[in-house]
Structures are given as C-alpha cells and as structure tokens.
Length: 612
Image: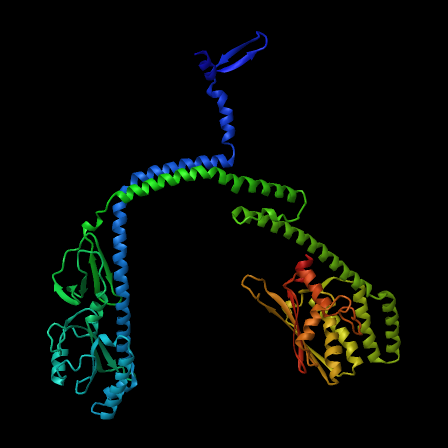
C-alpha cells in the first residue's frame, strides 16, 4: 500500500530535516502548464475544431432524421420538376415556332396582296406557294393540322396542313359556321382546346391560334389566319415519360383538365390541389402540367440515415487525429519563415526569398512580401535614376548656354549701329536674338505659355530672315490656356526640327501652324489636359523614323545644326515626362511627302495660381 501512495503523491526532499515528505498535487499548480499549452494559435485551432466538430456531430445526429423525409420529398419534387420543365421547354419551342409562323402570315407581302385583291387567281397562287414553302420550312409543321387563310368577307380561302386529306372539304359555308365560335379569337390563343371540326375522327383534338391580317398602309383588317395545332405536340413529349410515380400526369388547357393515358388526352374532372405536387406552365400559354406525388413515395428505410451518421462520426474522429500534424506542417513552419522574412525586410534587406512562396494562401502572402520587396527596391532604383537623369538634363541645358550677358550687350550695340544706318531688317533680327539670349540667361524652368509664344515669335523672326520669307507660321491659341505653365524652350526645338528636317529638304514654300486646345482625359476620372499641335507641310517621315526618334540615345538625340542642336525632340519629350509624369509628352503623326504633326500634352496648371 505504501508504494501505491508514492505513485499518487509527489515526493519532496527537505534538506534541513534530511527526509522526504509527500505532497498532493493541486489544480493551482497545474494551471500554468495548461495555460501555456493553449497559448499557441495551433493549439487553439485544434481545440476549437474539436469542439466545433463534436457540436456538429451531435447536432447532425439530432436533426438528420427529421430532414431525411424532407430530403426524399425534395429529391422527388426536383426530379418531377426537371422532367416537366424539360417537356415544357420542348413544347414552348413549338409554341414559339407556330407563333412565328402566324406572325409571318400577317406580315407577308404576297398574302397581303391576295387579301386586298380577292378573286385574283395569280395572287392566290403566289400566296399559296409562299405559305406552303414557309410551312414546310417550319420544324413544328408535323403538329400543325391545318392553316387556313381567308380574306375579310371569307370569299377566298387558302389552306395547307398535315391533315387535309383526312378531313372534310373546306367550304365558305363550313368556315363561316365554324369561325362563329367564341373561342376562335386572338385572345383565346393557346387557352382552349376542342374536337377538330373538320376531321372525320371524333376524338382528335386541336388547339387554335388566330391572327388577324392588316393592311400595312391603312391599318385596316383585311383577313384572318387560323392555325389548328394537334394535341400530339403535348402527348408526344410524354411518350417516354415513365417516372416512378403512382399517378398519371395531368394537363390543364384553359378551364379543361385531362390526364395523359396511352398517348392521348383523356378528359377528367378538376381535382383539388394536393399537398405534394409539381406544377409547370408553358410560357405565353394557359397550358399547365401537373404531377401529383403520393405520400407513399416518401416512406424510406432508415438504414441510410444510420449509415450516414456512422460515416460522419468516423470522419470526425479521423479529422481530429490528423489535424494536429497538418497544422504543424501547414501553418506553424510557414508562418515562422514569413516572420523571419519580414524581419529582414524591416532591417533593409529587400532581396526576395522564394522559399516562402508555397502553393497555398500563406504562399500568396509570401509572394506578396517578395513582390513588395522587389517593388520597393525597383522604386528606389527608379527614383535614383530619375533624379540622376533630371540633374543631367539640367546640366546639359546649362552647359549649352552661351555667355549670355556678353553676347546680349554686344548684340545690343550692333542693333543700335544697324538702326543708325537704317538697316531695319538687321535691327529686328538682332533684337529677336537678343531677347532669346536674355531669356536663356534667366534660365527659368517653367514659364507661362504666353511668354513661350513670345520667345517662339522671336526665334521665327530669325528663321524668317534666314529663308527670305519662304516660311510662314500661323497660331490659333485660345486665351484660357495663355497662362498655363510650360517648360521653357519647348516649342523652339519643334519649330527648328520642322524647318530643318521637314521643309528645307523639299525646297518649297513652308507652312507651319500651331494650335492649342483643352481636351478631356482619355479615361473617365482623368483630369483635362492642354494640347498644343504643331503641323508642317514638309517631307514627313515613316513609322520607322518616328520610332527611332523616341528610342535614340542621349548622345545622338538632336544631332543637327541650329541654335537648339542639343535640345532634340527626345530631349523635350523627356523633360516634360520628368516634370509632369509619363501621361504627358510628345506624340508624332506623319505621312511621308505630305505633313508632320507633333502634339504636346501638358497638365492644366495656371502660372498665376502656381506662383501663389
């Protein structure tokens, strides 16, 4: 007995008294290990999953039996609904084809002409031939017992159909007597059924479709088309209908009720609505199919319920057994690696780690972290390169500036000498050049469009004297864009390019136009833009030349003689994009031998507001 007590109690050695003492473990001392056990996410998920699975098993066992009968009933109801919907869809297709044929008769030109000209044998023959052709092309013609066309006073009659040889001869007297029935009017289409009036057999039923014929010019009624549809278009669909039901399918046409028995419609009295039944109606008709489901069909063996319950219990036990190992492999290890990668990123190491890109949701997080790291790295590199290119462009612009003050003062002196000697052309040309150099010396980065146009005029004066007036330039700039900002010396390189490379090689008179406008954004939500279009009538260029302009290197961009020889089209394009973004810049449209049009797109920024 003493050994058994040692197993039950904890043995504690007391050094001072040199002996062991037995202590019973308490719940308080076990609390800390249990708390630590369920402090991890994995343990909490296992616990919650086990509790939830147990709850679901008990709940399923409690309510499965109650839902078993409902399931069987629903299954049978869905099967009946599917079968009746399939049959209804096939019948609806024939209804649509027959309605289309009726509408065709009411709109056909030959039939309309025949109705308007009674007694015309030729018109009657053409109408009959056209009706016969359309009848034969209609895929539902096997269910059309006959089509009867008559004019307004029923003096002329045309008929085609599948039962003409098995029917009594049609006369005007018979037709007048027959069409006087109340059921033969367009409002009763597909809503009634009666015994075929013209058939020798007494048990053959037909469903009428009536459509009036109107004169398209006067909108007056000039005749009527009667289509008699065989009830076989319903009964044939139920030929292979043999479900495991104890009752026959019912058909309601208007206020008449039938059952389908041995391929025929048998009239019956209307039954009271059953608790378990399926009802489907053919669209655009009053033809309704009904299938009653007897209660005896819902009595099933409960063995299925017991088997499902046992499988559910076994599945729950198996799931609980493997869940712990799966969670360790699928969650704990991947999250540890994700955490390590985040630590590296936060420390400034943006190298991608492809070991964290698993084929699951956690792998998506890993791919997102790698993508974020690469995007940050790429963004930093692009930022450095953009700043470097921007400073390089500014340096090149400054590098190509001449000593402006010295030249300006010298040109000013030459101007006064030319004025004294009455050389007005030389004075005007030097004045324009001096103003250009003076503005170069200011080195303003962004200027109003009005100021840029003044500089363009000064530069054009110089070129005009150089080419002896063989070049003219027109401007159409609205006042609302005059204060919009533009990078300085944007238009002058374009003008120089148009003259040197476009107009001068042709040896003809050059015409240059500059137009400005405000355009809306290409995508909804984009801000409006200012658009400047410079067009010349020079030699133009092909697509390969345009492509080279935007792919040339910094060293080859703009190699030609001129005041702005280092400020080529690519240089202007990049200056605009560096300043305002990639949505703006230059686009070129040209046709060799005819013209070249360069479009500048800039954001709407008022220079006065920008200055404030």
